[in-house]
Image (cartoon, rainbow, N blue to C red; front, side):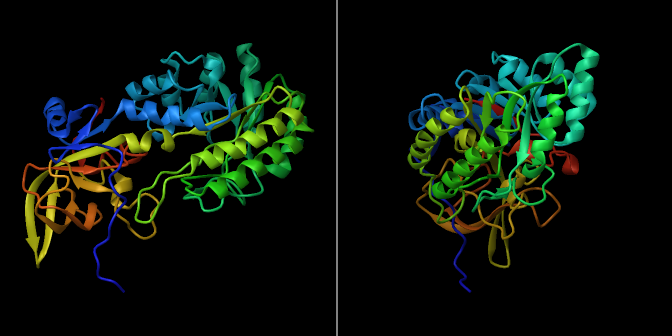
Length: 411
């Protein structure tokens, strides 16, 4: 077994000037002064815009681009993204409120997730938001609520496909799942839907997330289209929207390569005519979250103390797993791997050493970097966790040990 320190993916998305990270057109040290305290999250609006522009260039004309707000629901960020995409996808009433505050029309907002409560469904129906129905029981509840409100709810069926997205970080379809209606049960549910006062719009078929393999995504898209065509034979009306989910990944760890977006776009270009031939009038939607915002965000904390314990150097910071659970390795990692981490005001650093970066929490799990080669840092220096624009603050146990929550800024 090698004793070499674990590495991480290289810094490629942000410029470095005078050995200081640049974000939002300014030096990190200046941004820290502007924010006024650490820790904080910062999201670069130009990098988000550039990522969406890249998607538009590579995807076939006519394919809709939706933002999955669960990746990052910060209101200012959502407002920015809303002006660049075709729709928003929400997973809670709280996210729906943020979405409805944007200029995106309610009929371009969809609401997915198992276990939606009646008051959430009622609010969505009243707002005109489309519901991705996750079960036969939910379908009945939506129909009853629509009747009581005097409104015909707009619905799509979320389908649990009979396949999964290979090589995905998190499998959302295939096998037994709490998400969606098993594909083999969908024809009966569609038959029941035809007898209810509901506006059927189409299907939502999502099979996995955080995938860096274009071939796997191509196969999933092909199988998704074929499944939708088969299921449409049982539908009570034409399919107007086919949401094929997302799953586009970003590199976090050593050896990972950026997704070949051009190959995915070329494959979709081939599939669009097939959808138009079998499902005339249907629009394909891609629902992306992480891929749009992850690389545009950083988490910044400050070194409080440099400590040496039995020869190992620890940088103790004012940040930690309570703010960034994913970077600590406690959000889905089986074997802990380092997120990309740098000393933001000494990115390259003339003097370097192997250190572990830890937070102030009373648990050995509070690790932001483990035995990582970094510039030699002292109290006051700024530690930056890259790839932090998605599943950062809202995916973390902020209340743990009652430390203050970090600030979020869009720059």
